[in-house]
Image 1 (tube, helix red, strand yellow):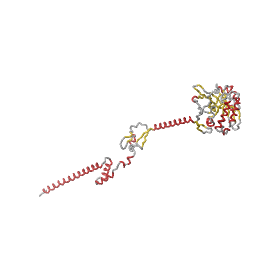
Image 2: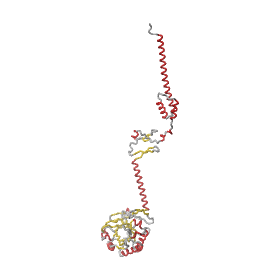
Image 3: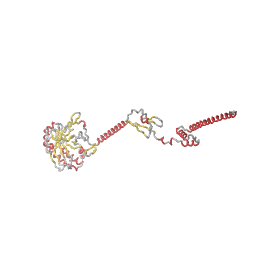
Image 4: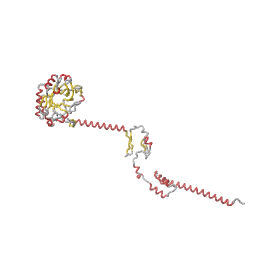
Length: 428
């Protein structure tokens, strides 16, 4: 009895060995084919790449979409060809590069600004860490540049520009004051009036004025060069001229008379004779004035004759003054006169005074002298300028200035109008 069939056994063992070789060959062939396919696709991807990252991205996307299902070669070529883009077709490349990366927390924290295209650091935040926090940055969107300004510096620049504007404005006003002067009218309105080039300008240096109440003094070369006086009329009652003299008064301007602004009648001041006599006895120099409301030259000459007759027996060493002015809250006789008529009337009055050997003078404030009369027609006559101020503003020559309208001084009860004379009319 045979347990094994030796021939069959040997035949089966030889057949099994052959099958094992076949299986191993198939496995190795499969591996070789896989490696070959992988190398083939890598080489194909490298040959299609133009050096940019865009083609590689397309190949990766194809590999993901076709994993386990190898695409047809013609189909892949069509995908590559249809997906190629140029720089001109990518509009985003034309946007200005401000060098900012909005998503970068590190850049926001330390102030670093990076050009996202080149990777270059435009602003190094670590270098600006000690910069004043008042500094801020602005982007120039037209050039892609980043500029920096300092807020404090901008404020200083604004202040400098403001100061420059103020200086230019002051220079303009100063230049304007050389050719024009602003006049305040009695109704509150203001007017710029041209300064005549034909009239002599005063040459006083008002820095040399010293006000030692109640006396205003003017100095030349450190020495007194002025005389102090007051205006006097019947409204002040009885006056102690000796006390007035001791208080520093050098001269008195005494009212002699006036023409009624509505009636037209000439009325003499009640106390003019008493005041003339007492002032002379106290050793004060004397000037006089008359308040005119003449509407014709003949009336002006009449007023002058009356005044001269009244002072004939007195020693008048200071000017004889023509005073004409408007009346508040009423319409005076002279209201209908124009500038030329007023100027001619003043000239007629002062000519009579000058012909009699006295020093004629016209009184007025800025409004009257600059807008109510023509000073070119009155050239050559002295001026008694009236302005209650620290300095006179009248541009032309003047011999006396009434600088305070409501002062006080020993010897007179109540308010007193005070004047300074820049000329020694008495000649003493």
